[in-house]
Image (cartoon, rainbow, N blue to C red; front, top):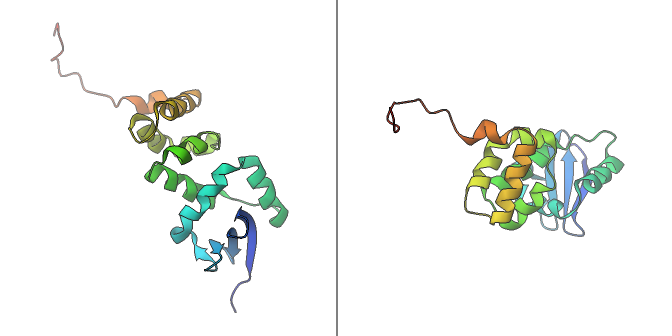
Length: 151
């Protein structure tokens, strides 16, 4: 017997929904049902256009104690793996402390890269600094080779 599919969250009205099928997350679209999260991460990006608190509150209407970490982490990984100025800038306001700590290395790479505007890169740097992880990832320890002036 196939586990029933439960819609948990509207991603885009009349277009895409985050669903749970048994114990697995997926995305329903107009054309496909329960596409596994591994293949449907891009469909999650429009969630960044809504406040995170609103998204979490909607999920609570359908699940008593929703643990959205798996789909949210998949969405964050997608944004950081193919940095898009728009979605990275939206992500800055969406991240919680646990997300920042879990993705600090990838966030730093984007902050130091050239794929986003200077304003977005600086916002990421401030976010990492505010959570105490910018300096920890800034400069890997370099051995003193004695080749600096005055050595």
